[in-house]
Image 1: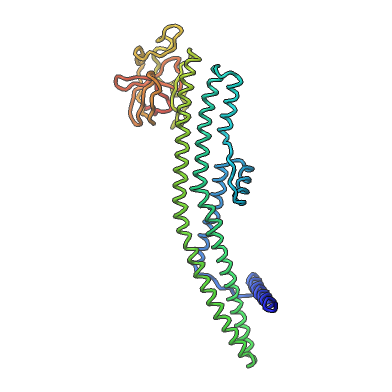
Image 2 (image 1 turned 135 degrees about the horizontal axis):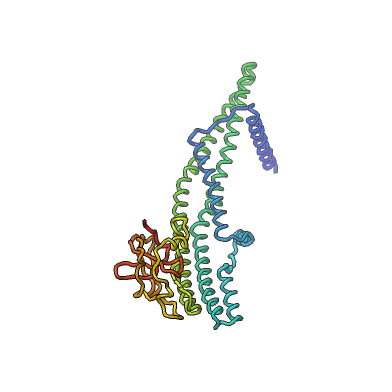
Length: 379
């Protein structure tokens, strides 16, 4: 009991001494041991790493789960060390609603059939999103959290110890300075000087030892950067895979809808192209197509009641044609379209009544419809 009381008294005394030293430093009444410039640089880099890691972690969580309530729920499950329950993605929920709507409105009607097709695509998109979230959480979020909750806590603990050792060292320097000042006035203070010098030597040794421990941990931030770099590459890879899957699913859906639209609206000139990439210029597809030389109208080339384009009857307009460079690969959806390869040059022109997002393209003895946004029209 006496030992515990003495220890508590000793700890209280140390705490009080540190508090006094810290307060006097703040008011400029005591000297402070400064760390070297390299050490200060390590501290600044560690703080910056911690701050940016927190921001990137939070924003990535928002990207993967925009719902704040869901994020709080997942956080609580993790803190309780319990498995986070599986949650339906927005795409999967939309797919469910569309499928139910098709069932109630008539699955054999054109609208019902289209709802079913879109529902299947949305379901695949939702599954792809789920896989992306799972992969990104494991390969990217988890390492960032491990750093903040593991390595950074260890660094923070050692930095606090270093701060305490520095306060003890500076307090010992102050005591020795007072003892020497008193010794100059009376010879009775010789023992106090010796005691203060001994305390200073001990404090200096403990400070140097703690400074070395802290320095090694701070230098380990470089390894943290290497690890986070690897995780960042994995995050980009998983995100690339996710968007590639979305592109394929939507391309399949667009082709399905394009073919069905032609059957539902036979009087419409339907193009089942890949999703067009944004044009390189601000000129709209409609404006671009309007500046192209015109040939015979689509209606003139087809028998009454038939809007199908007969490519063998299409001839370049008398007013001339234009050259175009292909920006992206394009796979023809049917025989009326012309497949394209990036960077190749083709001849293009438009027809009256034709969809403004499309042109007629010719390459050698082959011709077919091509999407405007896949082309760069040349002068």
